[in-house]
Image 1 (cartoon, rainbow, N blue to C red):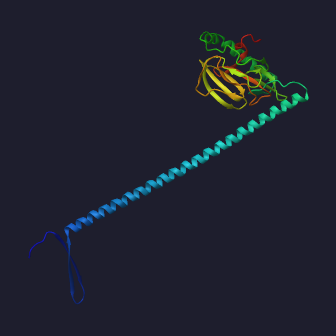
Image 2 (image 1 turned 120 degrees about the vertical axis):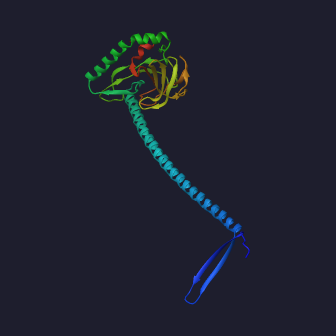
Image 3 (image 1 turned 90 degrees about the horizontal axis):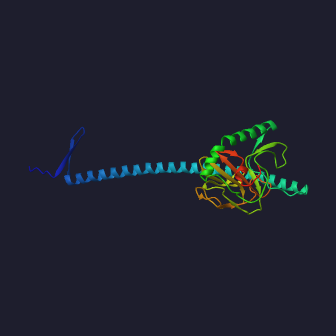
Length: 283
């Protein structure tokens, strides 16, 4: 009998009560190897497909989470916008009431307003004034240094009449209580150009509660200025500005009774009296 190494022989035996059955199956090695290759390829394809399905499921899960986060973010933005709209509505109503009050009294409405800090009593108001005066005395030498370096505000941001100054005042919108005004109001015609009082960098250029359209300028070394109630903003955040450059236009946005500029000077974010930085202004 000649041995043939090209085949694998498989013998299958089956017995019954009466007789035995033996069956011999021969499989060519080449076909067996091909079947093994096909089997490995099929298993690899199935594994790759299963991996792809798991990755797709992960991507879908991440996409759903991102969509949920975007929906929550949009909801928060809508809530914030509704709050800002309510604040704007209150400010506009207060301004209209002030204008109506001026008309009924047959008196011109002076431009006043701006963000203010409510106080409970005249004593509390006097304490705030004293604190501000003490801060100004302590910072005088510091201001002299800044002035020598050309970093101190030294021009009028807009030409006009000085109205409500820094310190205690009654609520200009008809309230009975007192409030502490943190800047200087300068009455001016609507649309008058507003100039930056010293060179620096714009840190805020947009709408802020109480200020309306406002610009913050950082002059370095803790010194900054603010310009509120603008009808138009002509600078962007991060922009470098030079003393005397036009940065916006006078308006009556925010908490305002009429067209004017709310002007603030701050040292280390503490407000000081802007009059001392307005050449020729009475203190």
